[in-house]
Every structure is written in C-alpha cells, then in structure tokens.
Length: 370
Image (tube, rainbow, N blue to C red; front, side, top):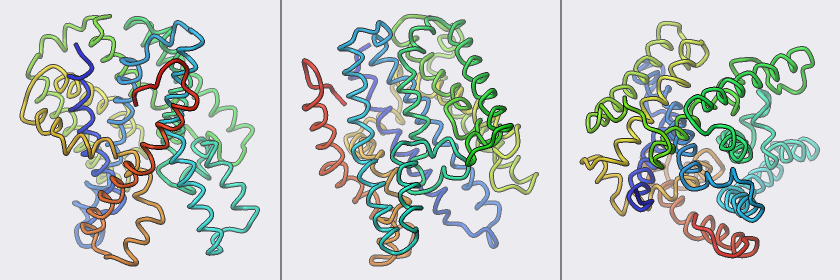
C-alpha cells in the first residue's frame, strides 16, 4: 500500500480533532445554564488520543527501519522530528514568557525557571508546572519521549506478543517513577498515579502501541483476523466505540460530579484503553476503504487544514487568542475562524519554512519529507 493512499484522510482528521479540543478549552456552553451540554463538551480532551495513536502509526510506518540503528538513518530521523516539532515551539514559548515578563505576570527568576522547564519539555512531567507557558505543549513531552524511545521500542516489539510486553514494561516504569517521587517528592514530578497515567508517556503508551500495531498490519508484518473480518464495517464499529467512549466519559463525570472523567480509574480506562481501540479501527477503515468520510477528510481543504493543526494546537490558548478577544471579537465562533486563518498563515510562513530550513542545514544525504 502506497503512502499516498494512506496519508490524506489521516491528515484531514487531525483538523477535526484539534477543533474539538479547541471547543473543550473554550466551551461555548454555560456550566450553570446548560450543565449537561457543558459537561459533555468538557470531555473533548479525549480527542488528543487521536494524535497519539496517529503518531504511533505514522512513526512506525515511515521510520520503523530506525530499529536497525544505522547511524545516518537514526541521525536523520531525529533531525526530522526536531525540525517538525521544535522550532515553532521554541518561538511560541519564548514569546509567551517575554510577554508575560513584560506585563509583570512573572518575576525575572520565576520567568527563567518556567521558561527552562517549558523549552526542555520537562514541565510535562510535573503536576505543578504542566500547564504553564504554552499550556497544550505538555502533550509534546509525551510525543517527544515517544520519538526518543521509538528506535528501542521498534527493536524490541517485532510482533503482537512483544508489543504487549513493551506496554507492560512502560506501565511498570511509570509506576516505579511515581512511587519514587512519592517517597522523594520534587516539584510535582510524577505527582501521583492519575497524573502519570494521563499526562506522561508511561501512562499513554497503549495509544502509541495501537498506532504501532496498525502500522504492523499495513506493512504486512502481522495479520489480525478480527480487523480483517469486520472489513468495511470497521467504519461503523470504530465510530461506535468512539461515541460510546465519549458518552461513558460524560456519564462517569456526571454521576460523580466531576469535570473530567479521568479523575477516576473507570474514566481513565475508557480514555486510555477503550477509546484508542475505536480510533485504531477507524484509522484502519480510512486507510483501506473508500467512504464519504474518507473522501471528505482527503479533500484538499481538509489536508491543508490538517497540515496546520500543530500551529493551531499550540496557538489556540496563547496570547494570540487573547489578542483576538481583545481586538477582534469575544465571540467564540468568530475567534475560532480567526484562529484557523492565523494558524494556517503561521504554518505557511513560519512553521513550514523553519522545518525545511533545519532539515536543509542538518539532514544528511537528502532532504526529508515532513
């Protein structure tokens, strides 16, 4: 199966998912006047799961040969990942803390400490700091650790059995780290098991593993008779599991008077285990079968929007949104449209050129595809 057939719909779906996350962060319903709708939308943090499964799939599908530890291949892989993620992250974090310091939100020492935690992505391991700076960038700590560990994961996990063992190994490491920082606490790092399970790679490994599993199927390395047997019905089964998972998250949160279902282990299980299974099945369908949804997600406009989702994701809770509210409109839907336009322009004029520049300067032998 060619990469050309695989990529379009999986690129387009990124836009849909990041827009759901936008409306989770800027919930258009009132918690007092429309509590049930507000609570349902408040569970849309779960759309981040799509990105973790997608990362697992794409990295395995495109780069599984890095497990051979060829020096040039491995070097180019890390250059490619850094070029894709880090330049605009550095720019936006720097701008955020400069503006914060200018407006006296931080003292000089505090700003520098938070800045270092943000640019090193160490904040993602601390319950005290994980939402500081560019708030959503905590998830890049999860992504970047996966990128770093991918060669070892791919070397070890060559079939279904070893992939399951890898999941259990990383769960165990997360548990040990949490116990270690429980007895030797430090600045909220690995604060508790809920934090580790939701906010760190060690708790989200199953989502990446689902993507790796799908990559193994697509590359013909393993066969899964269940997915093969459901065939074209995988679209409806995948969507049903996703819808049921979100509904469960809402019901768990509602029945326990909580804003997020992941504050309980039942909700965490739905979010970290059940939902990724539905996402994997949906991705399988989008890869192998034509449908109205696949054609929509593969349309040129959805691909363009999907390509700019990283910019959108990082920008949508920053000073950019504050300026939109201040100078353009406080209407959430107008702000949403403005954010799409700004993110698209930022992607074309800043994110993409910087990524190409880094690759041209550091890539060995040839320019990598993004």
